[in-house]
Length: 323
Image (cartoon, rainbow, N blue to C red; front, side):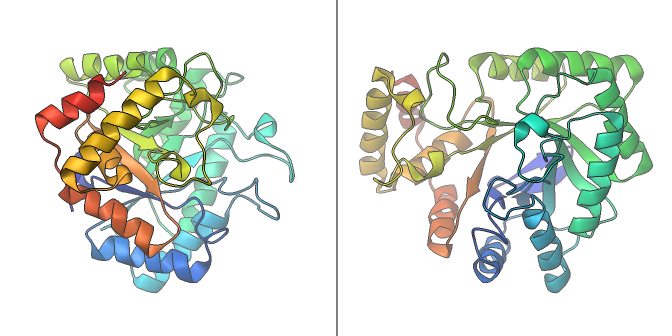
């Protein structure tokens, strides 16, 4: 298992998404996947306080609750970093993101405490603001998050699905007040690139842009490093499963060119499309931690095996240049 660090703390270079655990992926399978991931050296798991409110009968606390129970049953403590997200849970049963709790000071404090209780931890390892809240001043949100760190209930902060200008504004606000800055950024990203002028099918998703990566490089040059975590890294199975077609945003000539390059490299390496994609992400500049959601041991093993695949510089460049 390859590893990376978040503010000096070691995590696996592959993050396991727990969105479906305890709900659409049954408890026994969810536990088996987690056990296998940890056995293989995995040390980075992702969840949120709203997973999965949108399924029939879903409340939004299923994933965190399951992870908390798994931690207790397995005696897991600080060896696994569990990241969670707040701000997107609807305030009313049956509602959607239009009724999200948001990121007011009160909402941040309340949601973080709920997550802490469900996960059964004194301190949340990594807490993201899940999505933008245009109705709350960014300074209010940053102060509320900083308070959690100062109280010792959160170790590390992150931002997910925020426009680049908001990242810069949060940097300016935290720097001006001496508050801890969010160091981890989570966005949708994969090898295939969607059209920027077409909305993604999932309303809550925000795709990483060239501007975002340029910002990360510029910040690193100033000594302010970030870790970028990429969700939907395998496009929900669309690389390999005929029953999971690509959504309309990927319907453009560049997709065919990239798939052709992907198939060439897969043939050269003897790896699957998914494994080449994950290896390409692992070799991305700036660096990216792929987040994978799986529903079976076989899917997890395929993803884990990608960590043994190192693309040559020529293969990495060829994949990146395909248009």
